[in-house]
Image (cartoon, rainbow, N blue to C red; front, top):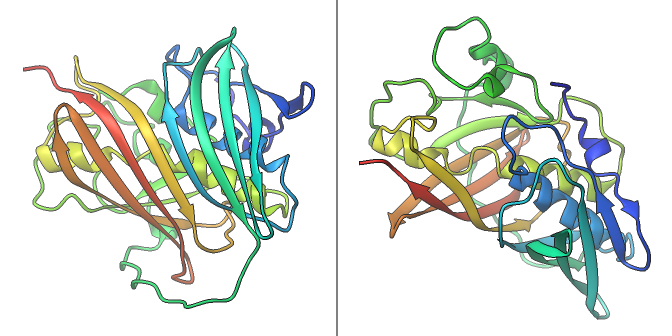
Length: 282
């Protein structure tokens, strides 16, 4: 399986006024990766907004599973253009059937109050093995997907929830370094899209660690339901970003994941939240 390049995945083809077509990537399962829909929806919306208005938020709903073998059509609705802000609604569909929808907001930079929480301390990414190398020569029963390089490089600061047995932990906090391994163009929108793609990869892992459940155990079902992001600062997705994640609640067959994203200098560049559907066999 070829390693997908983020720049290629985010290079949407125009299909008329405010209409775009996004390619998919080969996967070991038939369902499209949710992070790709998140990233491409921001890319589509951003094509209709002046460059001096960076993206500042996205609220998305995964309507139904998308086919990984088919391209995705994106229709952008120009909801509003104000003096400093722009709002866009994005509908993603396949074969005329809606699979995903998002509200994406953009705002011209303004001066104002500033503060942030301190970033967590973490082992430097250079001292940690990439995820695909962690299992490359191991007989640990994880899907082959985890043994391959991918569009985003992941380096877990602490344990992964993949190899059984997984012992429960007392705290759901979970730290992961991530970056696009290839150099990306100096386009702020592209880096925001890349972070959106990466944000869906590990955000629900804390619930598995907290409860001592192997993510890939037979019968475990996990699916993203909705996803929200807030972009606070400019960022580079091809440089190391620390994803500080936790799971504050699980109830009703659903789990809530939260994440704060920091760059190497300690700036809080983004905040993420996602609710997921989780089924555990009894």
